[in-house]
Image (cartoon, rainbow, N blue to C red; front, side):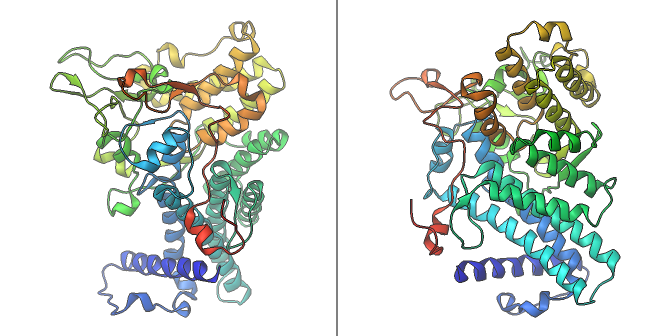
Length: 472
């Protein structure tokens, strides 16, 4: 794996050099051969701001930039969006397939693996500098907390989304290895930062997310209860340079490549399309899931495949969407973790209380629609009268709406496939094409079927370079 490791190191060096130019942009820094940046140039605590910027940037790039990142991949593989274009890797994911040799699959794997390596390597470097006496404890603690936090997040995202764990040229391992590593790094961050700080709260929230997906509910709810409902820790995006863009704005709004059409979210969400020219948008549907149906020459706009309708999301709209942040940890999710644990325990009132906290927050964030039934408080008696399947559908729908297009749906469905089980997950989504028929005939499949893997896969480039990983 020496070749791949050296490649990753080289890419990291170039990234850090570019970031140093941004940080010290008022100086005229030039270098005739940037590819010859030496390792010792980075072995300096003065580079910490640029290194941490690179850590955050690599995470945002891997999850939601370029080809949409892992977040868009998970959205297509589940039921958050349907591919309406002609990108082979996108179409395969949208059809419920994961192929290791798709170009996009290689990108998703390599970029997310790089984000993990860069964050972990930064944490190791910071610890070494401190052990060598090259920095103060205050600088060490702040830097280590931030690097470890993103190392935890990167491992959590890998555990949520990929089939297997492969660490730095090693053999195939259970994906829970990523979760174990995530907990290690979240705990490392919490060892040097106060729980009440934003970084500390984010680490606690990350730990709750991991323990939820490990079905360690006691630990998960203990941490979730420490996070205020109003809390949010976001990954930051920017309109420029393109590497920092939130590409949901491109792939599901500006360009007709993915659509809300064909998903359950279309029925749950708010269609903001005016009913007639000059009319106000409808107030039907949940404002946390907004989309519209563009019209061209009097007909619904088609996707890039010139076949399926393009219904564009408005969570990250227009060119302004490029710079919109994506929550990594937020207090409303912590309430939903507690709600799910209460439902498993048979405590309907407890579940209702937690969901009502989430809806109260939604009414604050979407005041124009504060009286809409979709975010009105639940009534305990009504939910108690529901069947167990209906209660679970309510909980799963609420979590889907609250965290739509935030990179969490795939991990959720993998958990629900076990508890409450596949037969209790009723959501359907358009999958493959009905050849020779209109798009309206494209079959809907349950989002969890034996034919649909609930994971992304290790990319072909890993198999090409890793002697410890036999080809599938």
